[in-house]
Image (cartoon, rainbow, N blue to C red; front, side, top):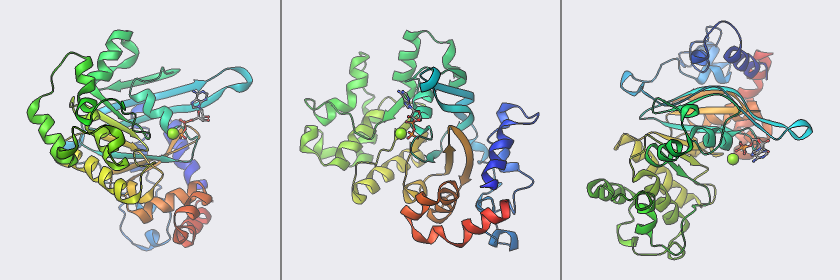
Length: 324
Ligand SMILES: Nc1ncnc2c1ncn2[C@@H]1O[C@H](COP(=O)(O)OP(=O)(O)O)[C@@H](O)[C@H]1O
Ligand SMILES: [Mg+2]
């Protein structure tokens, strides 16, 4: 685990500004073979060898959401839980970012804090360049409505409304009409065109989650957060939802952040952020299922073993000995 400790420590200590906290994992001069090429050090298999030092393309470097030294504490005294411990993270516009980590590592809390759904204890959160701490409640409500979309594991559709009514509900509440062209574009991408008059109970799980995704996108938010959107779905439905989110990034230029436990799901994203104990401990660009499993296994051997036995062998074992 020495490898992860080093990465996490570099993110917090030293003279670097918090701005560089996560970037530090890219430019870590000590990381073996940061180019990602399968040279001798790469073959030795530290997860660091599988990251890329290549920053996001210039066109994608806009920041859709940002945290700086974000702290979230639940409870007090004996029952106090530090859910987020100085998280500094940039989410780049036009990218599909995955958040992974063991249960309880702070993934949902991070998403809620970034989406303005929960108050933070300390630090900073910005969405679309706006500092959430500076907003009064009404402004925060408007920001959530206009700039943020959220997709929950449990779909959270209104059972008495049709798919179409569910999708436009956030706009209806705001007294606005959907941009018809955008609505049609989103619906076409969901493949739900002939299901719009159906109630949620008449739709499959995958269809319901695509309705929820369309609802999150219909206001053209700056950023969409999806917290384990495929957690309740079979693999076919999961694939449909993941493909829809991927399309929304590639074809519509949306920004999507998704929590997932699934290495295959994470591998369709552009970048994977790993959390442990409320801290960002690692990130991968151009993830593959194998690379993701290697990092997961290093974080928690049980997780890697549960997802794929091949990940529990060689690479992470040598990574641990190398990092020790
Ligand atoms: N409302 C809450 N009250 C008290 N503790 C909470 C609350 N929400 C989350 N926590 C705690 O914060 C930590 C992070 O939780 P969470 O963000 O839900 O993790 P994850 O989504 O990675 O499973 C956990 O220890 C959890 O028990
Ligand atoms: Mg969670």
